[in-house]
Image 1 (cartoon, rainbow, N blue to C red):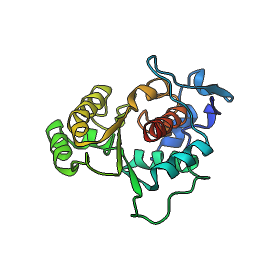
Image 2 (cartoon, rainbow, N blue to C red):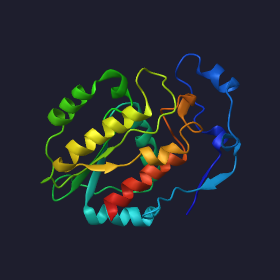
Image 3 (cartoon, one colour):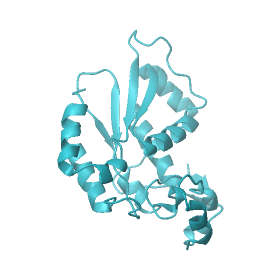
Image 4 (cartoon, one colour):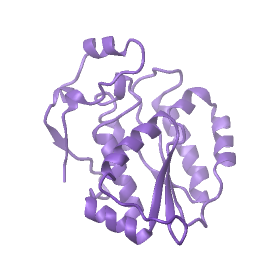
Length: 220
């Protein structure tokens, strides 16, 4: 399967003042001019299968998943929107309890925490706010920081994204949380498909691949 997108229409919504002027006058790459783009992201060491409705429904049924909840700030809303598209024809297991389980997807407040928190404050949050879930029947996932190409807010930089994500990996993995790497898949499209052209809220093909990764780890 391949992703297909009109990249000229991706990331064109505005909520911040001055955004519309920027979108009308910004320099764009040849990639951004692609109205019939198609492709997919493939890492060197493995292959992520894009699951269809029947496969996802079978996974939901087999694992008795009753709900999927999302945590975080702005990126959470984007992930939830793309997940809702993927799940629009899927029926969750009814009767919470009775052996059913929930799935939690946490964006750990990226990228907001990069300009609000120090690394020590981030470490304390990870240690205090995330309980140990190794014995839980529920599934807990967290998404790394992205490959940021704009310092629209102070301290939102690629190096800090890696630093904060690495710390989350070190602390959350022993507690039973599973990482979804959003950094690598956003690198190629960060400039071209970021919402409001802000280099931070990356949508389009990278976000579809993040959703593919979530179902890959959930169902395999």
